[in-house]
Image (tube, rainbow, N blue to C red):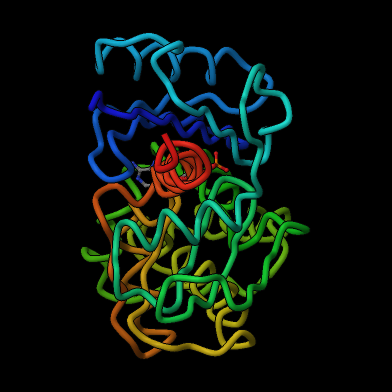
Length: 263
Ligand code: ADP
C-alpha cells in the first residue's frame, strides 16, 4: 500500500510551521519560516516542506491548518483550533505528558491531558503580551540582542534584577531605566525570564499541575525561561527539540486521524 502523507500547517502570529507526516507517525519533513500570518511565511513554509519531502501538495491525503492565522491559509481540507492541535502534537512528542505549557508569539496556554492524550481542560492568556514571546521580543530589542541570545544569559548572572511591572509597556520602561543605571545585562535577562515564568506559573497553577509537564511553542526554545518556570512551579519540564513544531505536528496527526487511516 502506498504511503499516506498528511500535512500540518501552523500559521502563527510570528512564525509559520509546516510538517509532513507519513502514515500518521513518521515525520518526513518540516519547515519553519520566521514570518507569520498575513505574510509570505505560510506559503514559503509549505514550499520548503514539500521540497524537502520531494512531493507535491496533491500527494497529501489531507492538509490541516491551525494557529492564529489558520483561517487565512488557502485550500486546507481541515481548519482546527490550536488547542486541539497542540494537545495532539504534544502527545505525539511525549506520550506521557499530562500538563502542556505552550508559549507562542502572542499567547500562552496551559493544557491538561488525560491518560490517552485527550484534552481535559485548558486556560489561555491571549489578552496581554506579558508572559508571551512578544514580551521577550520587546525586551530583546531594548537589550540589542536577538531573542535566541537571551536563552543562556541568565546562567551567567550572579544575581537578578527583578522586573516589577506586569505590563509589557511599563516593563520595557523599567528595563530601559535599569540599563541607564548600568544594571548587568545577564541579571536583567534573568529578571525578564522570571517575569515570564511568574505569569505562566499562575496560569498553570489555576489549571492544576499534574506531571509529567511538557512545554511546547517557540518560547520552549529559551532554556532560561524553562529553568525559571521549573523553579517557579517546583517541577521539571520536558522539552522536545521539536517543541515549536507541536501545533503543525498535531495538525498533521489530525488529518491522519480524519482521512489517512481510513484510506
Ligand atoms: P507563533 O506560533 O505565535 O508564531 P511560536 O510558537 O512560533 O509562536 O513562538 C514564537 C516565539 O518563540 C517568539 O516570540 C520568541 O520569543 C520565541 N523563539 C523563537 N525562536 C527562538 C529561539 N531560537 N530561542 C529562543 N526563543 C525563541
